Length: 452
Image (cartoon, rainbow, N blue to C red; front, side, top):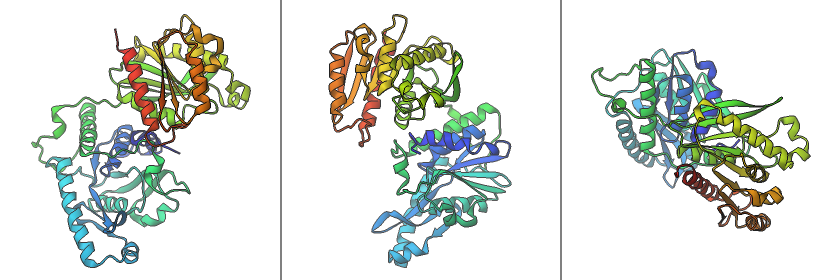
């Protein structure tokens, strides 16, 4: 399983934690990367969000290798085996620990603004990180929760190495993980977007969560003075989009989908995936997240049922796929969250052909189309009839498809542009190439959806 980013990982992780919704829960994220994941879990569980400030102790000559961790309340975890194998002296260990404790104190003060931690005594604490490598920081966070009186500790992560539970022992009462891949090397390999989380990102997550708590009328016990101001009391708009699983009804067929609608959405993009793919396409989800952050709603849906997809002729039936795309678009138009919004289509591979085929209909009503590694040539004689502004994006190493796009572009009579992404292959797997696609698509949609 590959996650588009930490927020998507958090939403999926939350689905595995629904059994906790009726408990008195506090969610704590490990800064920095674990906090965006934890925010989504806290939102789904309708629970307060806090941080458990923990710092890894890196081996002096190889800082990325953890030999232990330190946490708030004086918690200290040392991996004696790593210390021994790395030949770390007591003096070196003490020096690393002193430096990391100073950074720990700085972050705790910054994240809490003088407040104490959320009270967890007698409550269920869900400790969340973006993944586990050695387990030292997670172990420290669980111990902090225990020492603060948690009645139950649950450790939840999207990804971890095989046999990860053996590293943690009895630190948590329940361990929850979505994936334990055999080829685990690092947490980052399982994210498309694993950009560094900043202190500002952490503060924004905490402030949004606090605003939701106030809006729900639920109390958030903390050890701070009742008269002490909360950093979020100034108010902050929650830009987290509504993100729901839907069924798109198309006659006798019902197709699974995911509709994501940011606040004050500026338009809607419906995705048409390529052959052999589905609404769970990692690459399309990655692009969708970028569009959501720009204020664009997205619908990712299955063009075919599971039974239909087994028949290969359906997968390449451009007319069938185009009809499904048009029908799903009409369904989106009628959704209350999307009323009055301009619509666009994002097509990948054969999905791009379906988008262009459907756009040739005079009643399509689409303001922009983006094709990623698409096969516009499969739209055949319909290309000259397309009037919708169309952006074609192809990788420079995808020579066959690039030639097909150039030939198809010559037949288009609408506003169009062909962009070649340097160093990219057909699937845009090379570092930075899929990000370039997402940025190009975002700008194209915004230009055509927000212009008068």
